[in-house]
Image (tube, rainbow, N blue to C red; front, side, top):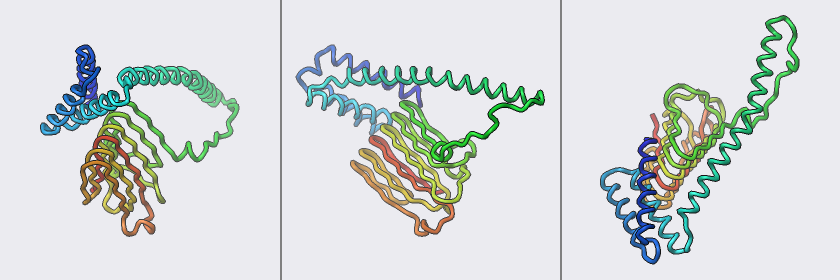
Length: 253
């Protein structure tokens, strides 16, 4: 899937450069119209990811023409800034991690030699660090479907790609667990146990929204749903799902 997305991006960028070279962007709306036609073509071929990509390019080019802004150069600049910032951040974060590993090795060595290790007091983490999981991804898939995992409050932000979470394989704690998923382009798929209490807030700017037995498609789709005995359930999950271009699906298994 990742190879398909990357290949599609390269192909789209190549077409943009081609149209820019042929001066299609200068004074007409030919280029966005062509990308719009390509998007419709791939919708009919049931190639959703490609169709969304071409629809997005058509929208970007159209507003670039309308507002006289070079969005293509702007995206390149933002992309370079993002990856550069990530590299700098990861480089800065590597030094403390190395120090922590060294200190842990020293503590283990001192314990094996019978010498009490220094700083043996347990480090108390904040409640936010203990109970909330945050994941951000610019490109790629986010999956929690393979093996069992301990469920806790989580926030997932994904730029382009699919997000799949199978709560039937999760070890769900007592009380309410909050799951927030924000996806720009792609599909969000959540599987929940049939006996689990749920509260669902779903928003799709353009695409499909399928929440249990409720199905909608189009633009600006909002769905609010809650299980009848939600307040009295011992274990319950609150889902806040949003997608700009794609689909949101929640199924009970």
